[in-house]
Length: 155
Image (cartoon, rainbow, N blue to C red):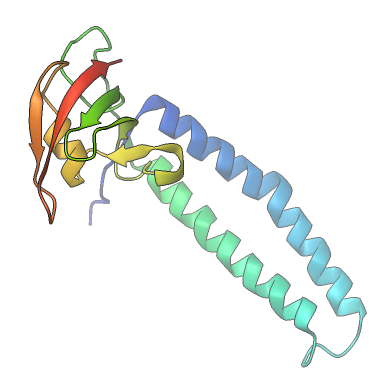
């Protein structure tokens, strides 16, 4: 059975590689040390430190597997930065015409989405609405409550 191909920007792949190395080189050794220290305390049946370290180890192992799967099956999205039309990896400043606010976001693949860093998926309502448009265009975002935006700048 063929694995899913994950689309990533070059920067997104580098970030995942850094996170993977962080888990392998820093986080895993730290949790192993925590487990050793907790075991040294004796009875593991009522040892909260041991249980917490085991939980963390399981989460790290799961994330490590997820990242490895993505990196082993990724396809780098090539973008034309000179193009005036919006695509994946572009940074877009737009004005929400309903709220009269300017917002700057970066469009990335769904694997790289991070709302805290204003990275939105090309598959979400806003990302999908922006793809293929250019500065000066007015676009309706077909979200649960549709709204209109005007694209100010594309980088």
